[in-house]
Amino acid sequence: MKNFSFQNPTRIHFGKGMIARIAEEIPQTANILITYGGGSIKKNGTLQQVREALKDHASITEFGGIEPNPSYETLMEAVAVAKQEGIDYLLAVGGGSVIDGTKFIAAAIPFEGDPWTILSDNAEIHQAVPAGNVLTLPATGSESNSGSVVTRRATNDKLAFLSPKVYPQFTVLDPETTYSLPLGQSANGVVDAFAHVMEQYLTIRENAPIQDRYAESLLITLIEQGPIVLTQPEDYETRATIMWAANQALNGLIGLGVPHDWSTHMIGHEITALFGLDHAQTLAIVLPSVMHIMREDKASKLLQYAERVWGIREGNDQEKIDSAINKTRAFFEQMGIKTRLSDYGIQESAITDLVDQLKRHKMTALGENQNITPEVATRILRHAA
Ligand code: NZQ
Ligand code: ZN
Image (cartoon, rainbow, N blue to C red):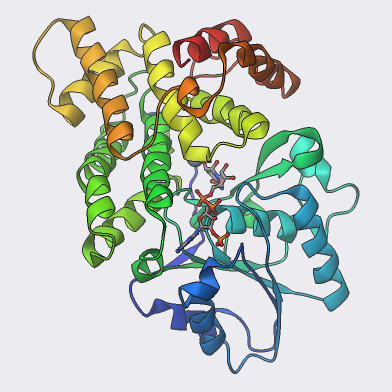
């Protein structure tokens, strides 16, 4: 196990009725900006619960319209509103896009210089406006991590930043807020969480049995419970388990002291930037191909995954690996998410553009061994065609 230092400062309030807890989390005198997306929180009653919890708070402004794959352009409008209103506390209510967008707003408000450089040049963030959130879509883990992904529509740049300054102060995970999710978004969440675990697990063998077995338990749980959500969307225990699994998949714990391979996400971001696919759809396309093309580097871990997660014990090593990849693809398809570029009308001729985007964003040495070069990414995408 490699050395690590770990502190996740986000307080988690989990369970039904827990939205009321935001009253004690946010100072009563705070000048609050509530941020949200396209309006799902109005339809499912979450915004009403938030307003009720904050009824004794003096100053509340609302900013809606943050899109899926939040745009820099819209977020800068929110920054302008926040500066004008003297906002000193942000409350994000929604999915990963609203929470990611709010992290960017929090960092951009006090930022000296061009806020785009936070994304384009990893400019250091010295301070951020404090923020909390109410999560309505279990998927990204953004509710209690330090990451954010923002898209600049004008230039097709979908870029991430990480900063300890944007860890949310608290998050509310109330599984009942997720009953209203369309099936496709519920499925997206399961597949995104699955990919997050895989990208911190499926690398080289490191002597880290706690991280391995915790990762495997999350994968097995997502495989078991994911399909239930599609047929019983209002089953509280299933929603609760999925919400907790997605949180644990990317709150930092399972990735401690082990190598990572975020190539599936980085290649997937380019597919969203150019073709607008949902984040999880891109992962369902890319991950099985990464497993196939990188099978020699990952052989030892792939065999562990095959045996412990899927119970595969028959056949030689190559057959076991093939079977594990096929089962992974079949799981995504079972969740209703297609796994080929062609399923989304993307032609093989687009692969050059996708790889050019990777080069433009300096994503030319991906993977745990930094050997997923543009040439290897091309092979991965061809296999995914
Ligand atoms: O905008 P509204 O009206 O709220 O509707 C949203 C949106 O259309 C809807 N939705 C959310 N909660 C709902 C609901 N509809 C009904 N009932 C509810 N309870 O779902 C749609 C998608 O929402 P979005 O927030 O975009 O989805 P998700 O949570 O999957 O977030 C995706 C974004 O997160 C980034 C992705 O790249 C993408 O931009 N990621 C962030 C990460 C991080 N910060 O750590 C890691 C991830 O890998 C990911 O890259
Ligand atoms: Zn993701």
